[in-house]
Image (cartoon, helix red, strand yellow):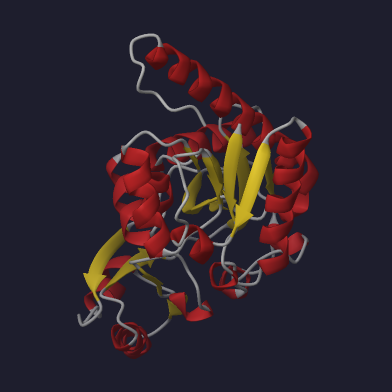
Length: 302
């Protein structure tokens, strides 16, 4: 089987360029050891391919142009891991809407236009302030996820988003508790969670600055795993990671979920689980193609 592997652009790996590249490289090596031929390309190079023939795709790509193109391929039956639609569903506004609509525990949030005055949300969400997150994409710059402690600061952040051409923002209530990061892979029993500040593995220091040192509140890991699985299913991603806030009483809220993160603290185990998932998907895909071929002579094998 011939397969394309699309690497993530550095711009979409803030603070994790080497880690993102390392997990993708590890997965490719495991898959190739089983006899699968993988053609590795960048996001831009794949968009320029002239001889692509609907081969399956393994992708960490995130650019809007690539995701749009992959969605068209997906609609005509190409196997893409992660799903192109799932990657898009992890864009902040879509993620927020989907998780809230499906009852996944998620912070109280509102989607606003970046030219809005959001002072009223301080009265609604209360102290110590609010989180402002760009709505149209993942966080690329540090400012794309910002905490505002005053109305003036919040409106200034929104104004900056507007200048950058960002039309929407997600405004979320601040939650008190421990920050917990997790990774999961669909169809396997792999699930890894940890307190990122203990390992200095985090993008933003604001949670610790506001909430204080990690208290290591007791929580049900299996319940978190099942909630993460549910969130990933709602969004349509099979290789995923995210963040949760665990409260003093052991309850928790998912505050973020991303397609194919770095798996840095558990790279070896994560790569093995991802490779297993990919092989399972390939097997299902081949079976599907054989089934279709029994009724048609127009099927092109890859």
